Image (cartoon, rainbow, N blue to C red):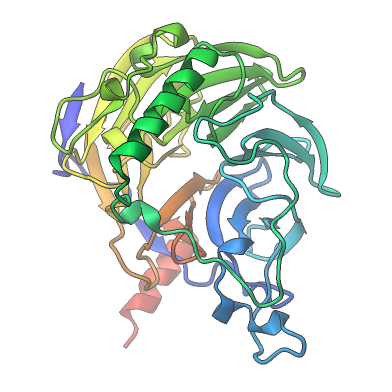
Length: 404
């Protein structure tokens, strides 16, 4: 296990923000909060956004007659080319987490994982999930929220705020219902039980890697063709059946001991050499296992971070060895660069703000074959691209920055 607090161990990868990417959106669209981001085999960038996050003042062009030149809701799924132009899109119910396979099928987390044909937005398949949710609410592919022209919701930033207090009677009732639910659907349940945080398509092994947020997070593998369950595990690679149903075992306080089970908001990625990186955001850590769940290492990042935690998402540097991990951090508004061999922090970029190169609600990141980093923000509703400083675009940006 390696614990770091942000002291750099060696020279960091060096990036510059590219303010020319993406190009202005067509059709008077304005993005909502970014909840999914991936780069396909052709280095095209796919984004999943939440159009219903937009506020009334951002949708004045939807009114009849419009009272402003801007704006209207976009489709939820948009594909950009390397130049930042929109090249395709379709509108699916909003979700969290996405990936795209080599045939252009799009996988979106929407209570479960659903597979869409990107040519027409048609639903092709979906993973099995429980018919109910632990805390109530709708389950299954529901009709989109009724979109009243000019009316948005703006309900997206509560991760930074403390939870509303509940009465003792409400808490007692909630805990009783939770206990019954967990008896009905134990940790080893071989279907999706919670919501989806992340999806990874593994075409080389014909598998789908999913982070289900039930009980703080479960790492699950499914067959990519049949969608049948294959295997899964919890923190430290423990069998699913050994995941505790007691919330005490999932609790983490800043600078405190690591919980024996995942704390929450688990995202995943897998390296070329078959190692699974599970970022447990609410516990400020990353677990490393092999593809069968054998635990190998634990990296702890910025352990004093509270609220939404420091380890939001995992990407890799584009070199064949994938020497570096790139970790998105929503609470601290930065991307951390870690040495993949030992988890040591070697650098960082970003700070809180809404200028180019800053972040407000850094939520998603992905990397293309040229080493460009793409980011998606859930609170400032935007995408950015960061290019390697030594690339042709990076050299040009450095020259521009030196101009008076």
